[in-house]
Image 1: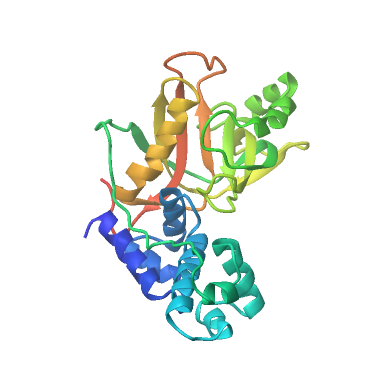
Image 2 (image 1 turned 90 degrees about the vertical axis):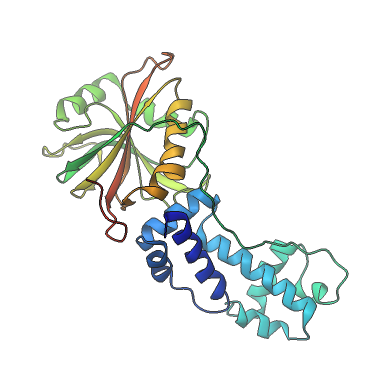
Length: 296
């Protein structure tokens, strides 16, 4: 069974359990990966968190039940995982534009949210340049800000972080850096939900180090582990963002590695972003996926 078949088997499991408690650890095992990897892969491929998908599917089925049966609204609320009729009514109205009591009368248009399946499509046959790197524990040291995720274009939320990176601060941090990737890094960590645009995450601008931590900077402890390091070349930030998208849409669904909860790091070769062949490295924390076998 290939990766897409496994993922779609997990989707069938979810569909079959929409009126019960869904065990996402089981869904991950069916998909051939950890629950963490499954949740983040789903979010990137579907464009929404798995919880939001389940919520929409349940409310779509609830609307069908209202039209096809004489069941009570309180029974529907319990059937689809809501603790009270009020909570169910509020969620139902947000999706369908009317309360369930109105939908029950019939004749009104309701929103339909069909089951989702996945299909891998790779365009152009372009190769992806990457390597696997083993790292001991280290820290990211620099400046931190809680921001929202943006997939395309320049994220202006980074401006205040950049402003803190004065010449003196950059010199101090660069002197502290003693491990790869060398130089100033953009580091994303503690995602609220990995791939929904607008979700929150901690963004660091700093360096990687194993040296004693100085005062006056934010620090993020990073556990030992493996990293898949991808090289992006081309106009910035498009080439980097396109590579990042391909990692999640093409490489991870078929690789013998799965995501871990470590931070994602971006290294840029310099500050001349106008170079047509600008080079970046994207560091993604991974571990061998024992359910698929490992890459040798």
